[in-house]
Amino acid sequence: MLVEFSVKNFMSIKDEITFSMVAGNGDENIENLIKDKKTGERYLKSTAIYGANASGKTNFMRALTAAILMVRRSNLRNINESLIEMKPFKFDSKTVNEPCEFKFVFIKNSIKYIYGFSADVNRIYTEYLYQYLSAKPSLIFERKNVDEYKFTQSEQSKLSELATKNTEKKLFLSTATAWNYQKTKDAYIWFSEDIDTYNDYENVSGYAFDKFASDKEGNLKKFTINLLKQADILIKDYNFEVKDTNINNVIALTNVNISPENIVQKEIKISTFHEIEQENGNKQNYELNLQEESLGTQSLFFFSPVLKEAFEQGKVVIVDEIDKSLHPLLVEFIIKLFNDSKTNKNNAQLIFNTHDTNLLSLDNFRRDQIWFVEKEPKKGTTDLYPLDDFSVRKTENIQKGYLNGRYGAIPFLVTGDSLWED
Image 1 (spheres, rainbow, N blue to C red):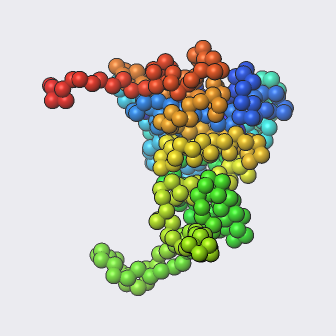
Image 2 (cartoon, rainbow, N blue to C red; image 1 turned 120 degrees about the vertical axis):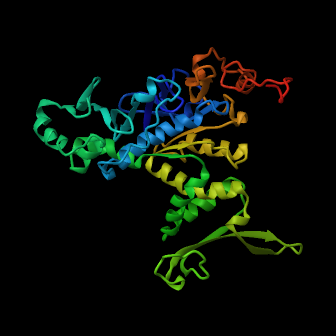
Image 3 (cartoon, rainbow, N blue to C red; image 1 turned 45 degrees about the vertical axis):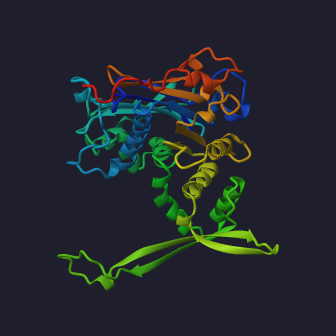
């Protein structure tokens, strides 16, 4: 479970911003909350992020993605390979030469962790990991000046040896876990398995293909059909077929010593079936190729394995432009699935950005579930802040207030000037 994320000096984010999934004090929409039975802390099941185009919403999502990929790719990193995920704020001669900084607070197996690092394209400068075994955080490791480490006295001998196996371009969290150090294992697994980001529904398809292809027992099919049915998409069944096929009539095989008939690729065919009532009252099944379905239907179809796994494993799902190709009521439907304790039994979390102001209602969200991103036009810097920063009444029309500019984070449009003026 994600508790908090902070980032500094990444793309349009110059100064540190902090995003929190910690719930405020209000008791409205109590079903939207996760209560930690151990500590009594309350966390949010979902959050929505709003802002004008080019304000930095996607850059915030990219920051999450970059930090997660740094952990996942660390053990595969070659010694001469650049850390291409690191992209500092470029509109300042100082920050462009400084490292990007990231910090996560999260809970794994009922233990809260704090993990962070700073890096540029050449090396990792700082890194740290703490865990909460009591009210105060306990050190697991600290790293500064690239290769200066600090460990607890009891773990000094073991971790000092592991530190010699690390490099300036690898995260110690990943290296220590690869060498079977147990105290970093859960934190590493959280990054590798418990949190995923998606820039839109299209990049879900590769993941979805694998899940549909391996659905031998039909559990994913059952989930997907029920999901589409609840979303009022009248697909009664589908068939997912994968087969090898030879490529014939290949045009550009210059300098390749292989004949076209020996080149094999995977062919995927997805058929959907609709039960249609005829004029005589009889029902008949009709088959369509999935590509003949609407973009919204295709998006929800490919997103179903993500939802199923999130609800089963309690994952954090982060989506950029969740409203792409989906009707506002379908987006609201997905949000309600995360907020519904009957569906979301393992406390999965959904974080998304959107332009859909129809969702801006205190019937859907608590005030602490709505965040805004705004760019300072003269400096080109991104700021992030919650609706909770404003004095908002529980009965207030949030959509109207947002569109009227009360909370900022909207485009300021200029009309009347000639488009042809110098």
